[in-house]
Amino acid sequence: MNPVTCPICDYSYIPSEGSDARQHNRRCRRWQEACAEMGYTPEHYAAREQRKRESASLELTAISSRNRVEAALLYAKALFDRSLSTAIFGGYWRLHPDFETYVGMLSIKGLSEHLHDSHPPDPGHIKPGRSYWEPRVSP
Ligand SMILES: [Zn+2]
Image 1 (cartoon, rainbow, N blue to C red):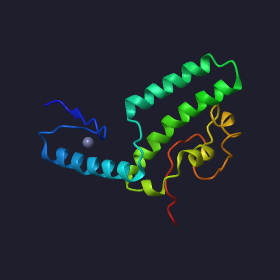
Image 2 (cartoon, protein in one colour; image 1 turned 90 degrees about the vertical axis):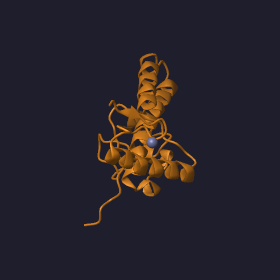
Image 3 (cartoon, rainbow, N blue to C red; image 1 turned 90 degrees about the horizontal axis):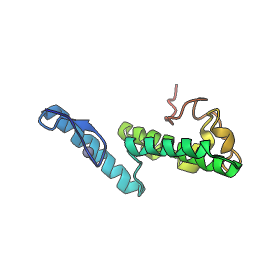
Image 4 (tube, rainbow, N blue to C red; image 1 turned 180 degrees about the vertical axis):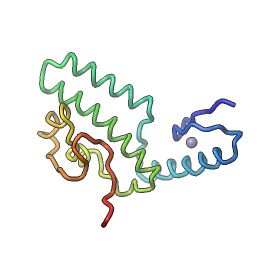
């Protein structure tokens, strides 16, 4: 049987396989509870990829620094939603920074320099070049 992708939580699974279905139920419940409590639903994979493509085409035609900032924000939004989705499934989404704070934490060459005027840099939370926010593990 072919896997299906849940339209709510974007999880691919085989409904006829009990453990897979149970795993999906847990993830889906977690996803729905988090989204309801946040009042925000991160975009799924396909939509995030679309956002990145829009960003790239905006970047290609960018004639002003304002366009470049817009393109960078679209791209950062896709990264944010991916990071937040991972936090939801990891169970630490309540600790995840909001978008404005997250953007300041990013240190990605070709991206961050367009965003740091509007989003003051806040280094040390996300490793340079990376885009997943994770809670600090105390030693
Ligand atoms: Zn689901």
